[in-house]
Length: 64
Image (cartoon, rainbow, N blue to C red):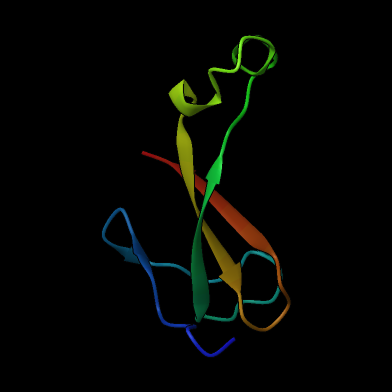
């Protein structure tokens, strides 16, 4: 992952809970609910910040 970098969460450096690596790619993910999807209101669902470990691929999810 070329865009992998160290990440800080709540003022502390993030390390992968699986392998202990300290570099991550960042993505956002929509947290869909059935009701919002049923009525085509997916845009009202919250988003999560996702940090993907560049070593093992484990995805760490965080809500604001």
